[in-house]
Image (cartoon, rainbow, N blue to C red; front, side, top):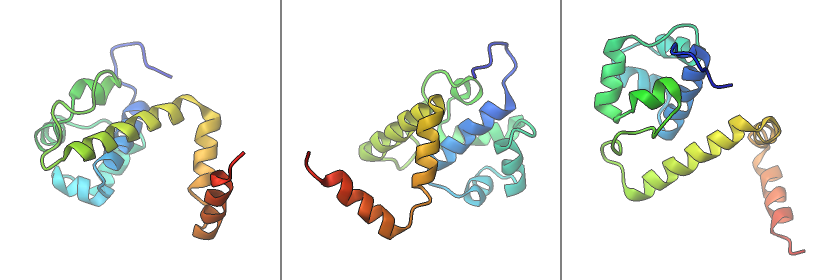
Length: 136
């Protein structure tokens, strides 16, 4: 799924933007406003309809310390430095989310299972938790 030419794949970049917004624990609206664009622009980037322009990219890098290399290629670390006001614990959680995202993206079955899990009701999740907690 990795793009091997020098032109970033808008769909793949959109997936990384999805991951970024989740890791930053922001809504699309909050993220858009923080970098000075409309939520519909961010939606277009996330869907791969068009690529980000230089001004919002610069704002993203300034505010969130995003690695441009990671953003466009998926290589390297997501952040050049931890985002402002981020604790060590939060960074560990961010890294865990990133690793989980990579695993889900690389394994279609895991992705489908995770997608189904997100639709379970709280009661069903409680039942699943009890099932998983049982000793062999």
